[in-house]
Length: 289
Ligand code: A3P
Image 1: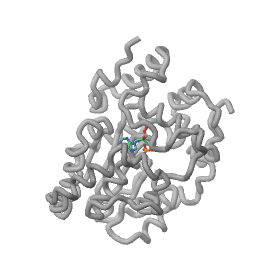
Image 2: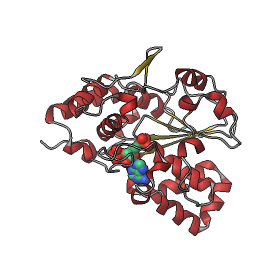
Image 3: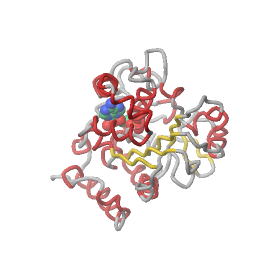
């Protein structure tokens, strides 16, 4: 188990057990006006955003125990295009596809959540370790995973190839671009921004402060850490939870100085001259060694 295992499908790494035919059919889904996509690279705050969106749509009601967010806001390339097309309108869809592959409609809405690559790598490591049947990496080390992440040899590919083309869409009217770190520092403002982005009906909802406060409360890390069967399949008790730590800067206790330098160098090269270069403060990215 030197490296995580994946299903290689058309040069694309998928978690093992992920149906390749659903991936293919997901790519052919015709986006509709009225669809709202949550687009992320893995481990950047997808589930958090799925729950915020679901709660806003359901007038501040939290996702009840017994339901799973991935049936309510399904993952396009996991369930396939037919499943998504059959959803009642308005459709809320999760995807990890790159900009080029994401189904596009000028009147669909796209919420992109970016997270700094350092914390993303740590979160992705625990995810890969935890889903044993998907990756067979239960005993894998961070050092091994880091090399795969740095090379872009993980499921959904290279972090920067995902981020940069989406950053370029950031100011389009049908794109709401948020960072995990901004959501952490001011979650209420993020919920309000999201409601404005979704339109008048959602702004009306949050004018009811009980709804706004309920969304804020039930999408907090503390609340989402409870009843985690709502977000993902069960994991063995000795492994970390899916809603794990929810911190900014956790990477500083995982990276060696050499790893920090390697990812910093790649970050600088890939983001040079793009708006991605300025998405995170030096305080978040800096490694004091
Ligand atoms: P950590 O592993 O750093 O804790 P995704 O949903 O894209 O897989 O992202 C998972 C990451 O988002 C995990 O990060 C998880 O703990 C974090 N997360 C989920 N819900 C959160 C919340 N309500 N507040 C803050 N972080 C949250």
